[in-house]
Length: 140
Image (tube, rainbow, N blue to C red; front, side, top):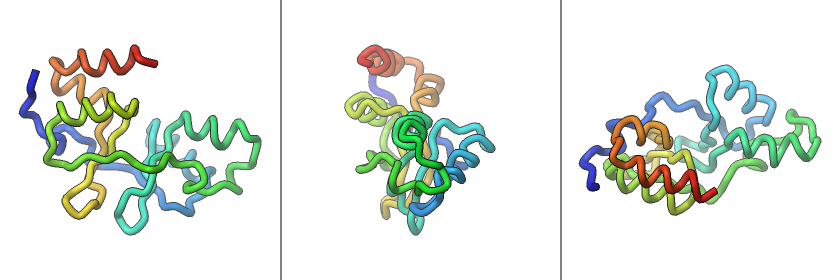
């Protein structure tokens, strides 16, 4: 089942980001504007967290607090699981399965954000890894 496809070859390179102090109102507007179901939070180019639609609903909307009064670092998932851009897609799939995550920030050797990998990209790029991703989806 080994794959020689490298993460940097299939990752999304144009990643939309916000910073730690961005209001959730701005985060949601950015997610809507670019039709994203997850957005990365960075500080000085280094990823500090990720906010998914589920995070917005559970940690912000459900609480009933106005989104303009909540900032990203109050909602994002942290610690953040990342992967090196030169790792294989198979390594990424196993990491995502282990941590039960659908989005994996991709970093360079210095830890700077260079991309984002999601479960769909893996399935499309390396169909033989579908069994790993399928198992992951069924675990929930």
